Amino acid sequence: METQFDSQQTLSDFFAPSKRLRIWRIILAAITSIMVVGAAYFFTLPKPDPEILSYSTPRNSYVYLDLQLLSDWIYDVSGDEDYTLYEAMDADGNWFILSMSDKTYNTLSTYVDAYNAYFTDDYMYYNYPEPTRLTGMTRYISSEDVSQLATYYSVTESEVTDFFGSFYLDVGASNLYENAIIFVVFGVIFGLLTLALFLQSATIQRNYKKSDLRLYELGLLDDAEAQFSSPDNIRFSKARLVLSKDFAFSGTTGWVLPYEDIGWLYQRKQRSYGVTVATHLVAGLVNGKTVYLASRAVNDDLVVQTAQATLRKNQNCMVGYSYDNMKQYRLRVKEYKLAHPK
Image (cartoon, rainbow, N blue to C red):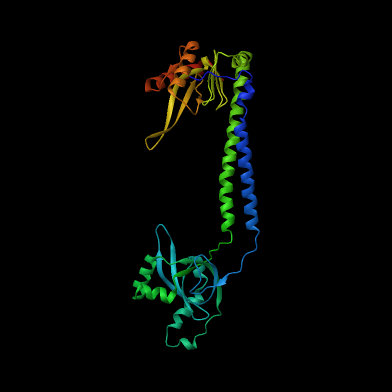
């Protein structure tokens, strides 16, 4: 049992954000600001010029191809990944594999017609369109795709890569904002963490104000403040729970509760795949509200000490989670609300 208590600490200090929490908020806010500045920097960088696509172009390069001929789709992939591969010839007569969206493909119908005309006897007399420039990123052709292409062309896999190269052009893709996106993602993550800490502090302060008003209405505010500084209190430092003669002070949630307000006390275990990941001490108030007295470091000693302190002042409080206690608690709440209409 933890009994140490700083008698110099006031009730408002107890519910104020801890020094550690304030430091973390500053750190996370600073990191979030750095992420925002970093993202802004990369978003304002000038767009690099693409390099011409060739068979020796490295993977994930930003390139362009001056399209002259474009086939109908030759391989359509769906499932975890969704893309369509096409055969294309550039203005210099080099053949490549391309991937593009249906929307982009539909704008290139004249090059599809030119492709079809290229494989007729009158190909020399066809009025071919001027090449159009496509930009994108080079992607490695997977072994499965190479196998499918080899089947389509009735050739060996090595013949596919010898003719088209080991990469295909992902039309429309760009790495321009790749670094910026990293900053954006981490900025969102750290921003959410910062917001969560601020919201946690705001919730504690809001609950403390509600408790303060409740105690004032009951004429117990001075008693609560005086008892909070009592050396006889039982304090669970890790759980931030203080038990005085007449009140429970929950530092993690901001509630100051007279024991008479607690109608039901029980543990709630949070499980993930059958494994307990968190244990909370929950108080069902006589007015029907449910609050957490402790959200971390909840052990048997804390539960027993809290139950004993509550029962000494409120023998009607039910302890432990069961169907009968839940049923009885709901009945008592209903009776309380009938006796205390708004």
